[in-house]
Length: 222
Image (cartoon, rainbow, N blue to C red; front, side, top):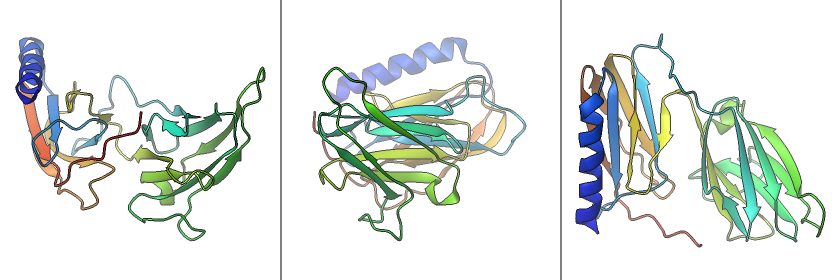
């Protein structure tokens, strides 16, 4: 499996190299055993702030509560985005947020609080919307349900427009980054100790950075 993952990554890098223009970057994230990590957030902060991505992060996102899960489990948005919560289960759900890493939900660290009624047969699902425009929710936010304690989800509001989630093979690509120095940082839900940002120099060709977690992420319930 690990050999296959390396082969797929190498293939992707090879394909990118055939058409790479200035400012292409691949960032790979592995766990402590060297296996690819899915749904890690990668944020690139170029020193040159005058360039914006050709494709911007969506300023709207929908998180479904379904089968007692937040779907998607990790949502990436820019600061100021509107996030809509939809309850597709037939029972009530509660949405409570706090800064990720706080370890618990309480009135002191909660960013927002919602309660959504269960979906009645033949009727539209109940929904509610919040805007991530406060400093207290910038970065990673832990979502939970007081009614169903096992439910966990995350919203990451990025301060940089250059941000992405790793895919199944543990890497993500950025195209047309502004030339010059940049900082790359990552966030992953189970990595409670921050990993130091890495410097990068963006220029002609394809750059590559690799981050390794100090943990093996927990398997998600399916």
